[in-house]
Amino acid sequence: MNRRRLLAAPAVLTLATLALPDRAMAQGLRLTAAAGKLPLGAADGPTTPFTGYDGLLPGPVLRAQRNVRLAIDVTNALAEPTGLHWLGLRDPAVLALPDIAAGATQRHDLTSPDAGTFLYRPRLAGGEAQLRAGLAGLLIVADATPPVHDREVPLLLSEPPGGAAASPAGLLVNGRTDLTLSARPHERLWLRFANATASRILQWTVPDQRLTLVALDSQPCEPFPLDQGRLMLAPGQRAEVMWDVAAAAVTALPIALASFAGTTLTGRMRVEGSPLRPAPLPPPAPLAANPLPQAMDFRRATRIDLPIGAAGFAGRRTHDAAGATVLRLRRGTVVLAAIRNDSAAFHAVHVEGHPARLLDGLDDGWKPFFLDTVLVAPGSTARIAFVAERTGRFRLTAQAINAAEGPLVALLDVG
Image (cartoon, rainbow, N blue to C red; front, side, top):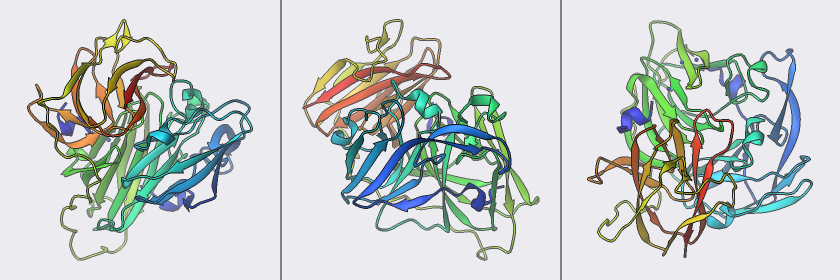
């Protein structure tokens, strides 16, 4: 896939309806996994049981500053063990924490060198049922100098707990089925997306509007406009998009959130009021770079094959989160990985703790973005490159799209 096909996305948003609870992280912050009930549609409609952080669906938006150490105590108020996994963080100590026993509390010390949009949820390979029940939330790590924008809009995309019976559309945005936004002409919205489904490919579409991708999988990228206003995300992926709202001939623009499983949630964006400024802002500038190696020397790279097929993933057929080690590397090693999908299903392959470049053709260049999750079609091969820059044990997972079971798991050891 080229970069525009990799990232493809119809809704009027009243932000009061879609707003998420928001809190700044600080020493002593607590987060609790607990059961709850709420109506997914009208406020006076029937309630649906769910499992959420702090009894919310989705969990609160947690906010932090880059390079600031944070402590968060996570309490498990469920009747079964649960884990907490931070998608996009590169800290191996946090990524290696075990599950939390029922009734227990676990300390998470976070220090992110990267600014960006992160997803917290149970780890797959054992936690997918809890994720489908509603355990998910956003972590936003801010840079000291934010980009030019007027409003920030976090958007957590998920499936309803209880399935189609809870929501005929089969999808939720910020825990809601009523997707409604509003904005003024020439307003710039900073959309922060996360696909919090366990195994669904999701596509967000707003036709005839200027949407520019500025970050993918918690890492800034070369800004480029999304073709036909479409953004496509594999399960677990995150993206940041600048939406420059254009005056429209109609006051309610259609928005659609579609799943490749065949369900669609529709909504609308009201463009109303006087223009926020006389003319649109110029195209968005690149976000400030995170401290990642921007170039890699392939001359001494370690080349590995990660096939997906009858033998499992990388020759291992295990869904156990403990996995089996398939590669041991020295810190600083450049890795070239060929992910060959010999199965009949699409797979989302996630490389824990290591943002990677998606390579062109036969390693003759790379796409102008980093990612930690790559979607691999049946019968195709995706090639990625990354630097094993942190010591520890990291999981490589291959999740079959639209599958009920969790991902196949392999391990990468960096010493």
